[in-house]
Length: 287
Image (cartoon, rainbow, N blue to C red):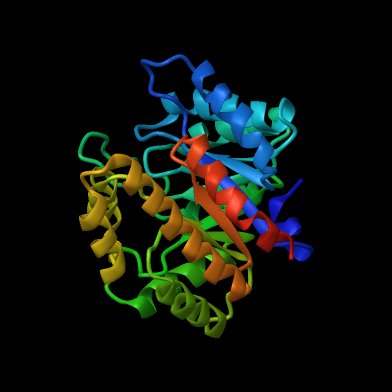
């Protein structure tokens, strides 16, 4: 099933997981999925590591298991900056054989370790290529605070419009911690004529190291109340975890009240945290 169709009749809850490290058995992710399936997500997305086609085996295997063993719609991430057209075609063929209809099409992060290949410069290039070579539902990424490499919010929304016009069927935001950025972004998108479903990407932060890494990678801004929370509980791991869960729940409650299309929960492969959040919001999603 193409996940964009689900938004027509309900608020969507989806989850993101990532394959285990290469040094860990792939079976470890199935223990995580055994616990996450009880949350009844509309779909689960599977990330794809940096470096090119050598990473696709785990992503494809896990996405196929989600779809064909667990009976949940799956989304395979596909970052193109380190892929050639032939490598993307190979991945598309594997997805077709597995019955997977949904792709999160990304440019991917530029890395000095893996020099970019030249076939795809932007996510919009990948999206157009996928549309020409298969009948997939395409999900795109978007950035409530603007992409870190974009000079202005106006340029950012123009780039997003190009991505949607290339064939994007729905959008998932980068994580954010201040809902006002999401509401302002949603208004800019509407003014620009972007009318596909937009899910809010929410990441519960449960330790200081995690948030410092996220700020470094994504450039997201931290509201004062979030910083206060982190400083208060950073030396108490259990309290920090519970405060991070509570903060994420508070964000989601407000987003649902403001009629968000859906929530995409970055689980960090931690079923306990996802289960706690789901217990707090499940009745709101169904209301």
